[in-house]
Length: 639
Ligand SMILES: NC(=O)c1ccc[n+]([C@@H]2O[C@H](COP(=O)([O-])OP(=O)(O)OC[C@H]3O[C@@H](n4cnc5c(N)ncnc54)[C@H](O)[C@@H]3O)[C@@H](O)[C@H]2O)c1
Image (cartoon, rainbow, N blue to C red; front, side):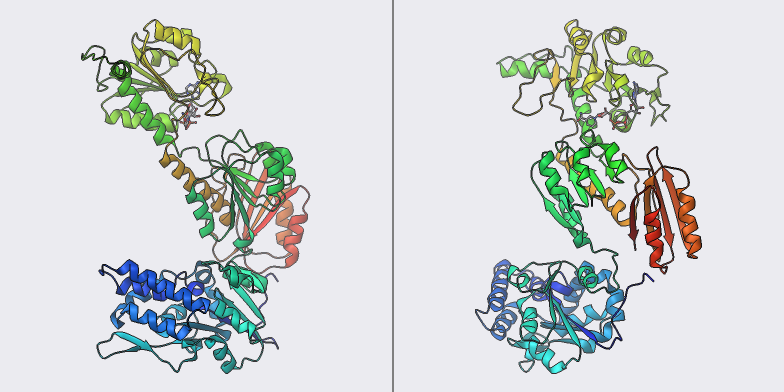
């Protein structure tokens, strides 16, 4: 059966010794207590720094542990009344992998000891909430004075002195294997004094090189510890073993999101060329890039662990999508994250252009002063014509109406009009009616020169014209001609048929130095907010795929939005889209009497994606047989 083994009840019993501060919880409890007890004191930050320094001096052996504890408690000036606030804070700071693995902690409670130099008053409420027994907690106890102030600790307790943890384990006289999990040197000392068989350096919250160096094994999470010991755990495969490679300076929020999930994240500032990427990608499961890294078929030949690629941008031309699909690699991008940024720029430009601000501003820079209302108009009541009514077009429609404009739109697809916007039956109809025309079509090749001499001739005289979509949609000589003839009274152009590849290259265009023309270097969607949105959006998609199997929004995979996995195992099967695969899978399920909770299938031209949720217990052979079906590309198991 696939249910994981447990060594409870075997002849050789295993005992688990777990540290508290920075292991069971993400924080050091006395630091948190200090933050509470010193509230309102002007020297709070100074005192907190002193406490941290004393903690470090104690840990490095510069002063004795007992002395460091005494000094810290004196500085803390804490009170019994502050303990509930501390406990509440610690409850919210339980390490993620401990919280996830409550089942393991509860089921093995008899053999788990929490041994800490902290204090029982706050440790017991926290660890018992995850099933650990209060009598298995070994820690110090506070001494309070008659007013309830914390004045000292029980000096008889071995944990108030150096070597205390080893002393406690020795007294326990455990008969069996002893494994210690902790982040500190004092945890390693148990192993050093021969009282433990293994020491696992726990690095989910802090990584102390001196401790890691001494460890038998490094455990970036409790899942890793459980995986290493083949014990039941919340993750089928510890996320710390899944490598994420993020290139091209993706937004820090993305790094944080992957790290929070417990993945092993590597970041590189720049793009990698093909050979560098081949070298870097071998053990990578999740790749994040922007527009400058090319994920070619040759790179993919070496990407044997790669499950998904996130393009932290809009376009995916830099990725060989076909080759990704054939290898069962799902690709995601961020198509809407900068919609609002483009809309705001368009609105700003429309107002600047219709007021003829650009020539006025330019003239003033040369000493001019042209104070007049001539050729300056309000946008209120003007007719805005949107060509393309997709994400950007519709959002601009809404914002423009809020400014009092009348919105007309034309789209090749029948789109629902938002607000009071009016649909035009043809492009020609729209061109003839609008005072301001803004292009928001996609860049398909049929749209090349969509707007040329004929189209400009259909527009009203003195029209305001914007292109913030794609460069090749407008024939530039036709636009230049229309501006020079006064047909177009003002233009805003952000995208060009030929754009410089780097900031060092010259921008060459016939649009330079024309009156009332705003030129911007393809920055319609470039704002800090859009970058942050992308940094949030793309990891969200990748994590949904990794954690749940959902492919909604993928640019190359059949799209499936799946329910959250609960009380079942999820088998994900990606295969070449040939007839009969689902039937073969289901005959395997039938042969082994598998209880199916749910099954989902979607295909595209190249691949099929089948998700089957099954009851947790089934024969190991099922997985082997599913993997063995001809034309299987990838198989994954989630639980
Ligand atoms: N300047 C920038 O920095 C920047 C940033 C983001 C997006 N963009 C560009 O803006 C454009 C619009 O983006 P979006 O997210 O709204 O795209 P979208 O795909 O949501 O919308 C495009 C719409 O154009 C319509 N369309 C296509 N061809 C048409 C035609 N010939 N006539 C009328 N309608 C047509 C489509 O049916 C669709 O509704 C894209 O070209 C995109 O590349 C530019």
